[in-house]
Length: 273
Image (tube, rainbow, N blue to C red; front, side, top):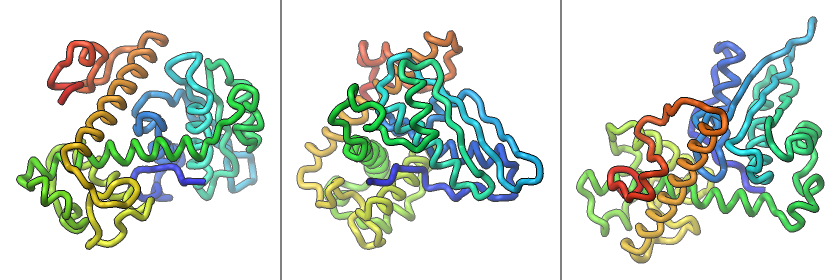
């Protein structure tokens, strides 16, 4: 099974408070469709820690909720599975209990995740042919492409030509210095995925291969593909945020993130940039 993607962050230092360590691990859990942390998406509802007397380990309880009652069970399962896996990495955690709230399959989902039961065994009738490994790989490809586009565009903005992008070694990207916070974030995440997928482990390897490890053949066509992936992910993200705000009557704290109207009016500063 393909390992889920994560930020290239060090494990939380053990001198941090336990709750801070838990939140640091939650930052590594992605919404698989959007390649954004479930913490940034506002999905995490509550975190608590219980420590039985005279024991050196604790149980961490995490509840989360999604934008709609009918969010796809396979997406929800991937997130719940990620939450449990990331928290149980902490050496002082004996168990992570994950609770999905306000969802059509919450009861089945919670029982399956906390018992270590597979998605297929619980949702066989609903998703008879579901292969979560294949689904995860599909989302990994999109995450790779989304991160890659950000870094390529940043290198172009620095003055590099498309022909140079096609043959650029990883070492040049590693030393590139950016000032935009989002570019800095995506550069680190992009280098991490190159390592995770063994696409460019050496400084001399191509910095911008395809997900299959090949050299990009046609720069313009390839960038068109990356752009379409980005717009699709941004639209999905805006939809998720809008549905969640509407469902739970939350304030809009999205800042400069594109909103749904940007996609219908083709706002050049958001959806079509």
